[in-house]
Amino acid sequence: MNMLLFVACVFALLCFVAGMACAAIRIFRGPTAQDRVLALDCLYINGMLAVLVIGIQIGSMLYFDIALLIALFGFVGSTAMAKFLLRGEVIEP
Amino acid sequence: MMEHDLPAWAAIPASLLLILGGILALTGSIGLLRLRTFYKRIHSPTLGNTFGSLCVLLASIITSSAIVGRPVLHEVMITVFLILTSPVTAMMLMRAAVFRNRGTN
Image (cartoon, rainbow over all chains, first blue to last red; front, side, top):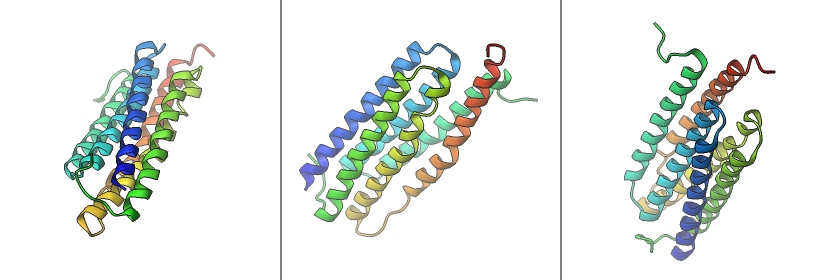
């Protein structure tokens, strides 16, 4: 049973790393700025899922906190960059 | 190898959910790479953001509950946070794209 879960964890990690590679290629190639922000959004979601899968594989509860912080700060960064693209400044007076 | 010993009722659903979540996230990321315009491209990562992360978080809930021996539900917090914040980011990016493309179409 543990071998099955180990193989599933490795498969999911490979899928998430391939997804992060696709998002990184889109960051380098993206024609406009909003493409790059969208690819960064996809990149941090895939990284957070990879951290969660590593936490499942090791069996530790600590990785949950890291994933929560990645989700929190990734949302803040994506929203700030989208707001900058929309209005030209992040925090308006 | 795994550091802990899981029973079969926890290992089989967690493995299936992990494989399904990985396939969904990879599909969304490939769509981000292959679709043509930005308005088509913004659809594809939402597949991995919502359903893929839901599958991985369910697998995490199952395995941590089986390790501890009681229901562990604090992974629901990430699910609720992602469900709340993913449409906000998509909507603001869409408004920014429409604003920046307003002279060209």
